[in-house]
Length: 337
Image (tube, rainbow, N blue to C red; front, side):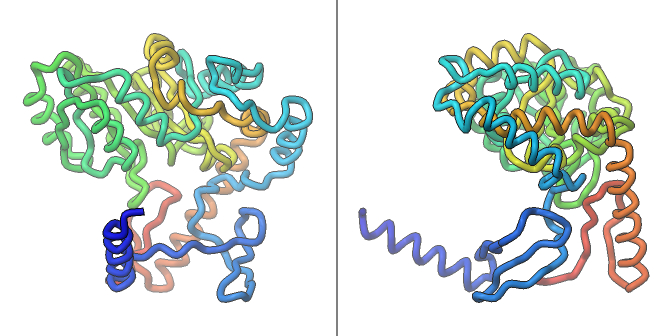
């Protein structure tokens, strides 16, 4: 290894420590639940977990654990292949169909993560002659996907529809125009103004892309997501999301939307074509998760919102300053860390 590179990286890492930005990983010795066992300095202690994305508490649900065991027994541990060679099982196709039905879309394609799904969509479908108008607070995976596409990027201020209109005007001569937004901005818990975004897309002939990782499973009457919550069913062209948060908490992502888009991604999306297929254990457990949401989703979502309301009420009563919002992400403002 070239020593100057190692010296440079060591110096940069040391700077992170000095700035208080070094990321130390918590070692958890129990399943992911509301109360977890954490090992610190060789000692274990039980703590309450307020920072996972396990919105519905399904990460260690007995039905999903049983379904995972069954999937391993019936479909094996792994596929050792990409999808288009010999990596597609019946449960993968069934899960894609079930997700499309759940989300209210025409078709769905599975990826190993939503990071891959976002990158795979933008890189595959757009080029230098196109324009992507992206919210300033969008997730890193959207930012990286736009870079890979080499499309012209226009950045509008968070949820600022006047600025979005201005950027659409600037991009009016592009071949294809895409408005890209997180449905829920994960640092603040704010919802995108999807109705206004869709109205502007209709006016300017733009495609609407929405990452709903922090909405699918519990937003909306049936848990279909933020587009259901905000009355935008059928108006979103592309929805990406994850199986790694409310929908079981394991891993895996998807692109769901117009059938022509999904079919093209199957043919040309590099993260899909050159990554191993989603493990059968995740596909099998995810199918059980969808069954569980059909049967108990209303109860699970009700418990989530009751917990969020209780937390917000008690924290405010204790004198903490919280950001306003209508989501289970509740930022507690502590000032300088």
